[in-house]
Amino acid sequence: MKVLGVLFIIVLTIISCQQKSVELPTLGVKGIQDTIYNNSKIWIFYKLEGNDTIAELNKNNSVANTHWVFNIDKRLSLKKVIPNVQVLQAKKEKPSMHDNGELMHNYYSYVDTLSNKLSLILLDSIQYVTEKSINRDSILKQDQFKHLFIDSKKDKVFINDQLIEKDKIEDIISRQLDSGYIKINLSFDKGIPFQHYIFIKALLQNIKSDSMIISNKEYIN
Image (tube, rainbow, N blue to C red; front, side, top):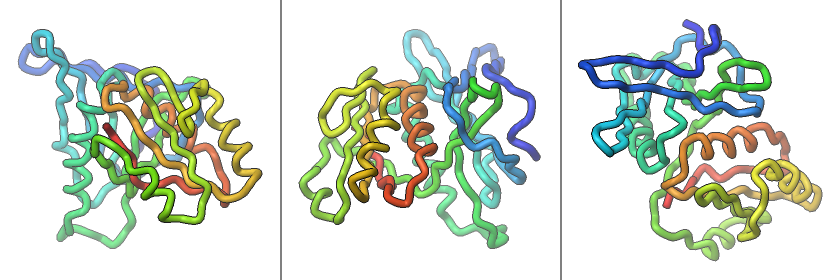
């Protein structure tokens, strides 16, 4: 089974006279475009019930011993999305009698508008932390790296409390790499849309350097 094939941006489904849709994030950023065999496609739909926006999870295809590809509507907020992702992360971590010993990965999908292809972002080992505040002093004491805190709040991005333009993230990090080893820490406002979250994740995935690591803890508050 292939993940990459015919390009689609919007999937519209009618079930029980209720309209649900998945409008994938669209980014002008390169991503993983390898063919992923043996995969399960997981959908998180954008659904309207009255004045309420609901993230409806379709996990029926989440076969344990496969790669999982999360197709998530870009309009949903992280507050709606992350609890569903956490549920499935916990499911994947449970031992399975069908485990064949092959390492299986989790991915987020989006449409790369540069190549007009479906692309992927690896999300293995991410631990979402939903604490209301981050003890930065404690984090700074843990490692010998220079720490960069990327904070996403609404439509703004801050690096170490300095407001920056989103498309300058790569340049700023690249300049920091010239001065030694750095560790990237990510914090996201739970109200931001998934589109904004996935944009930052895609940018960071494209930075290849032995002098940089990205913390597997992501703070959603």
